[in-house]
Amino acid sequence: MITIGLTTWTEHPALIQNVDRPVKLAEYAAALPVVEVDTTFYGIPKVSTVENWQRQVPAKFQFIVKANKLMTKHDYGEETASDEERTQAFTAFRRMVRPLVKAHQLKAVLFQFPPFFQRTTESLQWLFEVRDQMADLPIAVEFRNPSWYDPALTDDLMRYLKGLHMTHVIVDEPHRLNDGVPFTPTIADDQLALLRLHGRNEKGWFDRGQDWRGKRTLYQYSSEELASFAQTVRKLEPQVKEVCVIFNNNSAHDAAPNALTFKDLLHLSWHGLGPQQMSLF
Image (cartoon, rainbow, N blue to C red; front, side, top):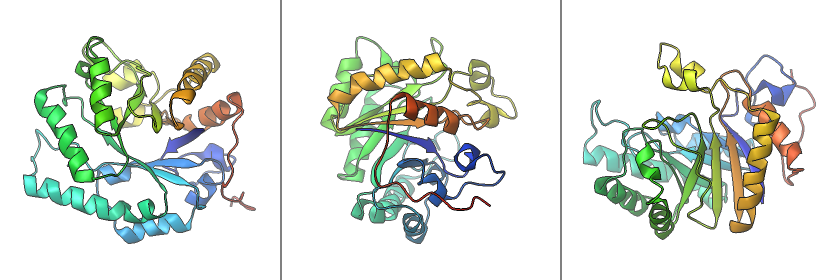
């Protein structure tokens, strides 16, 4: 099975005929079967908020939910949280996703680690502790430091992740020798292959100016690039239960058009999407 989704649901006007307003979750769910929720990185919402999401989507719709920053140690170097605060974050997060788990709507919890999270014994131990804290919840791990992709050690990494029942996130992003990570289409777990496509805007990605967050994913994938991703997905498909592709190249609202083109390229259709809205206004 192959699924396609986007990061957030509000910022994709192509899904509502380019009407100039935020996209509603119900409208998003009429077009695509999965969404990645990133706001949980900054703060863990109430259970009632999650239940409200569920009321807006069909039963088969699924969520990828980004782990809170305390769970990925993004707070290091700032006001580092105490062990107790970190444990509380895990507890609150598990409680928050419980309705999704009960309804089989949680595809994965995305642990996107910071660029300074290098491959060390301490980091490998933290992955073990993450699994312990998250119990049997589905986990996907995205590394952003190139130390994780030493060619001589990649197989060992995949075996380690497999032992922890974690999905390896396959990343497409700008990368240099000591910054960013290469596109590495290898899997660790036979349940899910997750691709996150950030675009290839090298200048916007590495030049951290005032508007860096607004420009780093300013990129539109070409037909040739999408065709190459399609080949990768087809190679991965026999190896896993599901291949999920998330487009995050959305600084100029290019993610949804690229995703819809990619859907057509792979001749995909999904049962159980939400109803098309009669009025977009």
